[in-house]
Structure formats: C-alpha cells, structure tokens
Length: 129
Image (cartoon, rainbow, N blue to C red; front, side):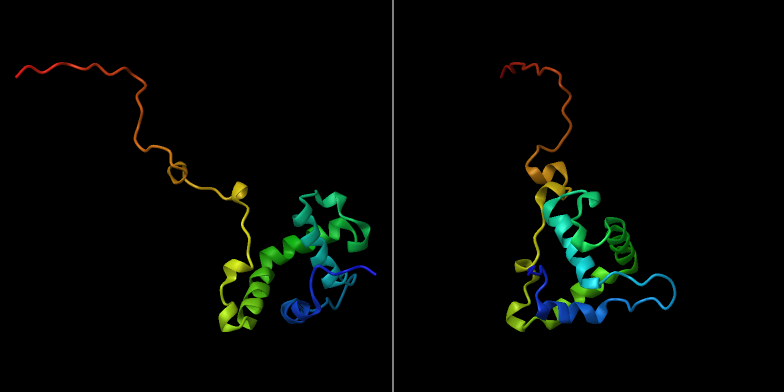
C-alpha cells in the first residue's frame, strides 16, 4: 500500500476547487495522483521525464501543472486551505517554506556596500593650520 503525500482531510478541501472532467476527448488522469506527481517532482527536484510511472505519464502531469498554473487553480487551492484554518493556525508562515537559493534579492539586502566604487587610489593631503 502506497502512502499519499496529501492527507484525506486535506484532499477533501482541495478536490472541491479542482476543475471538473471534460465532456469530450480523452478523460483526465486522476487529479489526486497527478497532484501528488507534481508534489513529488518539486520535492525531489527531478526533471519531469524522471517521474515514476505510478503518477501517470510525465507529459500529462507536466501539462496539467502548466494548465493549473495558468488557470489559477493553485491560488484557489491555497485560498481553500487558508479559509479552513482555525484562527490560531492562521499563520501561513508555518505551512509554507521558501528556498532562499531561488529567491531573488537586491545585492544590498545581503549587506553589500552601496555606492559606486571607482577603483582609483585616494591621495591624502595634509592641511596646515
């Protein structure tokens, strides 16, 4: 038996905001399996083509991730989760993690000196009183 990355309680919140299946054409793969494939890919840092087969075809998972990103599905998922939090759990900082290697910051935020360096030498002159 495989364990799920998404608990059943969390999934009950997420499934309500996911798009319904298509009427025509090939039916979509299971939303939960696809979302867990997306989670696996970002947890491991692996390329899409290395996605294990039990998540479905990697092309389908990657395409669904792109579609959900463009359609704002992830924003709806986060909003649904945030609205379900209790007042004491309202701090989303405990739930989210940001990898600092991928966050762009200005060079001065890291403590670099501001101002322009000319690279030239400085000549000191003695001033007589």
